[in-house]
Amino acid sequence: MTDSPLLLGIPSKGRLQENCAAFFGRAGMRFVQERGARDYRGAVAGMDDVEVLFLSASEIAGQLASGAIHMGVTGEDLVRETIPRADERVLMIEPLGFGQANVVVAVPQAWIDVRGMMDVEDVAASFRQRHGRRLRVATKYVNLTRGFFSGHGVADYLIVESLGATEGAPASGAADLIVDITTTGATLAANALKVLEDGIILRSEANLVGSLSAPWGARARAGAAAVLARIAAQARAAATREVRCALAEADEPLLADLAGRFGAGAPFGPPAAGQPLTLHAPAATIYALADWLAARGAHTISVSTLDFVFEPENALMQKLEAGLGPTPAADGARAG
Ligand SMILES: Nc1ncnc2c1ncn2[C@@H]1O[C@H](COP(=O)(O)OP(=O)(O)OP(=O)(O)O)[C@@H](O)[C@H]1O
Ligand SMILES: O=P(O)(O)OC[C@H]1O[C@H](OP(=O)(O)OP(=O)(O)O)[C@H](O)[C@@H]1O
Ligand SMILES: [Mg+2]
Image (cartoon, rainbow, N blue to C red; front, top):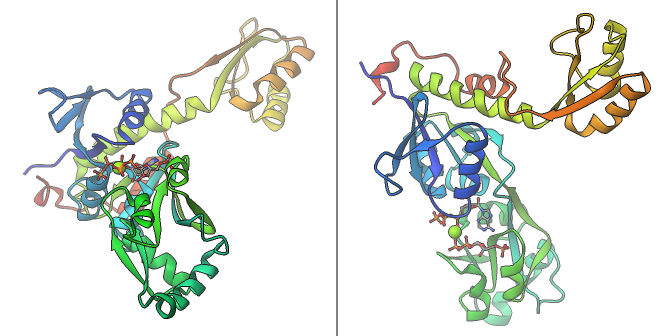
């Protein structure tokens, strides 16, 4: 009986690739491609239960939906567009803080009276009368567009499916307005387009996503637990500073006061006589915390960053386990 390792989809090109590699790097995961950069399968050094597949961001969304991979990094825009009723088929485990982009409705700047979706509804209604045809929307986000337009009562329009350079469609006459993704707005501006005031369909960013239809055997779960433990430990470390100081009366009431004022904990307890006090404090509080400690006679208040803080409980793995339900009795049967 075979039990599949965790199949983890990582963007191999495009906007998300570099940030994604850097993210896993910070979490202590180094990808090994034995046959060089063109090898589309890989491993993670020191993680036997994980196999990495290098795919495009849109393929990752598709393979999470079909259950061909267990976990992957992709944009929420692709998840919502590619997977009907996405919340039944995948679990958004954690937003990753990169790959931010908005899916928006944009119209020619020359349409000065058109500011919001209500105006688009008016334009759509009068378009056939005035031009003898329906309003045309160029996009590759066909499903997101349909949902958003129907939510705003716009029905009389035609989608022109676009495979690239969507922003050029109004100028070339291929469509009248567009739905596309934007980050800086530079491409929209260069094409004399403007975003409607209520035209943000989705605020997207890269997410760590789990598949609810993949065959989650014991080995895949062990692989996920290993990956999520490092990610959680890195995230905890990034939000925390370790503060050490010499302080004569670091007793329980003082520690309670520190927790209440600054959210600072003493994970190793009150120090023994003559030993330094070690605190873990939210990064944003350390200057105020240092002042407060100094006012109480502390000296050599030393602040350091941390690489990892591992704790026995892992909220990310708990979230995944809750979404997956209990391990099926005969894991091996479907695993490859
Ligand atoms: N400014 C941006 N423009 C487009 N996508 C962005 C931007 N910023 C972040 N992204 C994210 O990157 C994802 C992948 O986009 P990208 O164009 O890099 O993919 P790709 O590798 O070209 O894939 P495909 O060949 O399937 O289009 C987007 O769906 C989105 O989630
Ligand atoms: O708001 P901006 O910062 O200008 O970015 C938006 C542009 O970037 C993306 O294209 P990309 O460069 O990924 O090329 P593609 O269309 O070939 O995927 C997107 O489709 C927009 O055209
Ligand atoms: Mg692209």
